[in-house]
Amino acid sequence: MTRFYELRAPRDSQYTGDLSARHKWGSLPGLRCPECGATWAGGMAAYPSVDLSAWDERGLYARPRPESFDEFARLCSLVRPFLPAGARLRPGTRLGPLVGTAEGTFGSFFLHSPGLNLIRREALERLRAEGVRGLHGVRTELVFQQPAPPELVELELFPRGRLHPGCTPERPPACAKCGRDSFAFPDEPVLEGGSLPTDVDLFLLSDFETILIATDRFVDAVRRLNLDDVDIREVSVL
View 1: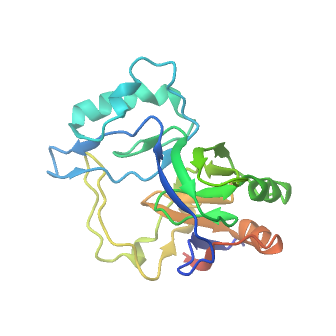
View 2: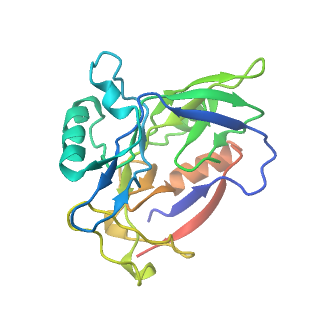
View 3: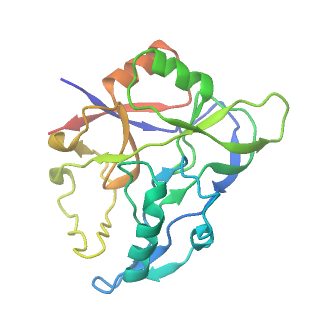
């Protein structure tokens, strides 16, 4: 039986790495929902493989702003052909490779910015060689402020599994129109077994896209290879 783990940045890291960066083509705008009345942009998934360089309408995604429900849906339909199969589009979903500046030292992983899942190129290749499934890394366009910098890539991950409803008993229902689902992540999360993917070893939670979940295959490989700058804790499954 597969076991699952939550991955996070360690509270006390021996590394000093820091970024000032954004995704090249911006993001989907926020959404003003006519049904629940919320204005929100909670999508934290990023699709760094998206290339809008030859598309004249790419500027529609450059400026963060709220839009009406119908305009948001139109912008989703326009950009969808450029996205990888299986990508989910929520308000705030980020598009294109990571661009900006970086400085300091970096471990095997860099998970210190919510929604950014970075890994050194050599660590990614070693995990693949160990048989870890579903790892797609996209080269960043970061400019480092030091000589001989590491090559960092961003993992393109998809929202897949869900929390078990038993661990969020006070969670309000999601909006039927816009899907907004606002709640605090539980101190003791439990995953819904039937929702978990069986074909990849690393993914985002579909109902909390800042949470990174790995299988025991992934975690065993990380430990065998002594990859660092990541905290690992097992998560229950029902």
